[in-house]
Image 1 (cartoon, rainbow, N blue to C red):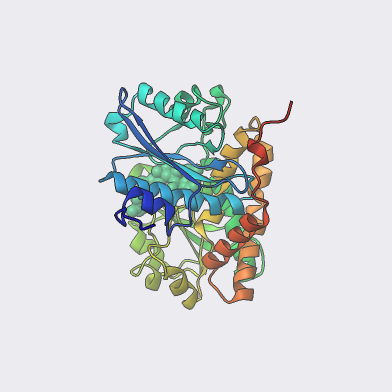
Image 2 (cartoon, rainbow, N blue to C red; image 1 turned 90 degrees about the vertical axis):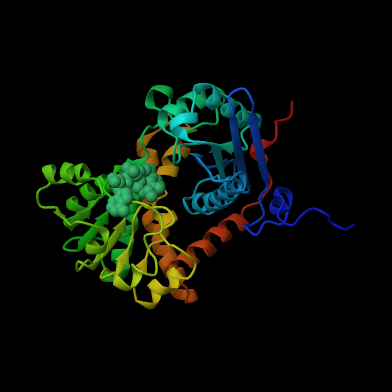
Length: 370
Ligand SMILES: NC(=O)c1ccc[n+]([C@@H]2O[C@H](COP(=O)([O-])OP(=O)(O)OC[C@H]3O[C@@H](n4cnc5c(N)ncnc54)[C@H](O)[C@@H]3O)[C@@H](O)[C@H]2O)c1
């Protein structure tokens, strides 16, 4: 039968997706509250799809769908390498969080999450916060990232920073033969929620720390507490400043055609999502002899934390799981060396291997007999 759908229709995009073939994509609309959302489930091979809800004023509905497809696929890889029994999912709410977000809209969204019966577990992302998750959680038991008062774990940046530090220790092991940053000069771009915790770990470990941030108060807060921390005006100055390690902890796209040739550091390991500006940058880093710890591997502490909420949050249990980021990062560097590929490609291979090895039977969804 001839397919008469236009090649770029939403349906054709889903079924002939070059993004890795999603299991399910749900388009949600609630006229009363004005909710328009996309929930994308990339995979439930390892368990319920887990990933945050982004609230963003997309230029078009197609852009929103594209983002949901890309982000949910990324979550499959991230959750697999974090050792979680979760597949990948992500939701986007189309709108301006500052003007369109209302309790009614969040509740309507929560009911759509409920309608999936546990196939999708949500959390915070850009434009959504712990207080929003508390509202959404009123409609379903599959919402994480809640406040401690609502049974959640609160701010996820504590374990995210801890995990990044573990990844950095693994990189130090490979680069300098010992899992410590003692005596190394580490530059952190972005000292917000994650970056400022990372400063503490590095100082405790005996590293020399230099920071930069576009918000002066963020820099001042750290220097008031730790006067020995150096500060520079901007990221361009930071990366040229004789670093051993560069830790991008601000926005995505930090590693690009302009920054990679200018890096003085021989290790890159930071919290920011999507650090590689485009495919090929991972090879440029490898060609320059720079060891890159893949972002989605080392920044998984946050998702490890929210996943733990589903079992009644236990900080020590979540921290123990996040400490495994050290071993995972080492395994990625080893695989990269064995296969002669950059670490980013090795991470993808290891994630795909874990997903493929798991029986895709969805026991967790099947109602028990009787
Ligand atoms: N918070 C988490 O648990 C978590 C988990 C995984 C990944 N991440 C990622 O880590 C990064 C940091 O997250 P966060 O929660 O600390 O965010 P945040 O907003 O608290 O901190 C980011 C900091 O970067 C600064 N910044 C922005 N642009 C900059 C620039 N051009 N140069 C220097 N500094 C700049 C901001 O002023 C801010 O202080 C983000 O990319 C985020 O997606 C965070």
